[in-house]
Image 1 (cartoon, rainbow, N blue to C red):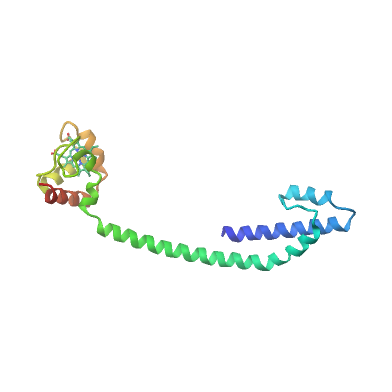
Image 2 (tube, rainbow, N blue to C red):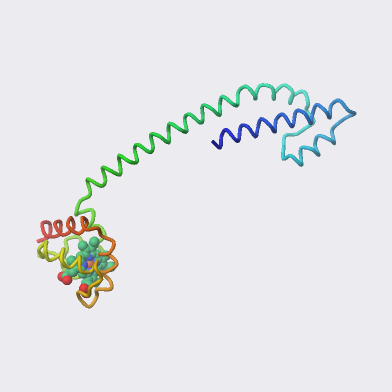
Length: 174
Ligand code: HEC
């Protein structure tokens, strides 16, 4: 979209410029008038070399719309492919989510092997016990004295996350 608008703008600026130069050319010297109208229309190309302008500008109107169309088509295709890739990646990630991935958010406080740290030791706890506590934190229930630290983390877990991470803790940490 933007490219089309831009090339359209360039085109109309180019023709504006050509008109300004041509009309300036037919009267006297014309060096002053074109520069003033350029300033107000935002065209910055230097005015004096009129023959050059006449040589260069006619070539652009035929080339630029094509460029715009090609660029638009490429942009559309890129967007389409990108969206396909994104939805497929999202599906793959959702179906490949593991307890180990969920546990990455717990390592800092419970240790890489569930040995405990800021939070209690999780190694050796049964899956059901871990799930039960996580659901309690998530529901806003008081569990231990430091519930306030664990509660916001549990509330960010889905029920599936809780099952996955509890399975992971119970089966991976001894
Ligand atoms: C910011 C540090 C922190 C993070 C991160 C954290 N926890 Fe905790 N966790 C705690 C603290 C502190 C407690 C003790 C809370 C209390 O007193 O009830 C706790 C308690 C627990 C308990 C109860 C343990 C018990 O024996 O009573 C479980 C289960 C648990 N966390 C699982 C997790 C899981 C799973 C994650 C990752 C999704 C996680 N925690 C992330 C700090 C954290």
